[in-house]
Length: 102
Image (cartoon, rainbow, N blue to C red; front, side, top):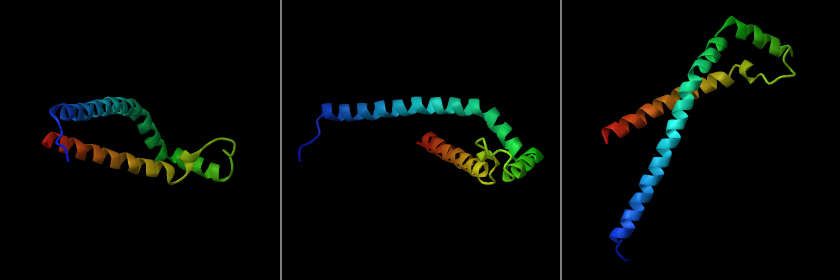
């Protein structure tokens, strides 16, 4: 087996750098979108826990919204998204802590 040359090692490390840079740029865009989305998400969360949601949920069960997409009126759709959002936030914190410790 041949030894890796300095040139090959530099190329390998440069590739890792470029991949990491692209990931960081993608992450920046996702973080900006999440920040922008936060106020609208809070509106959705407030609605989900409101009396209005309960009334709309009952109306949907009676067929009042049969002609439109209304997954938000299911009991699980938003609740699952809320749980996913929290799990992703925890994961981001764990990754951030790992980065800061390294």
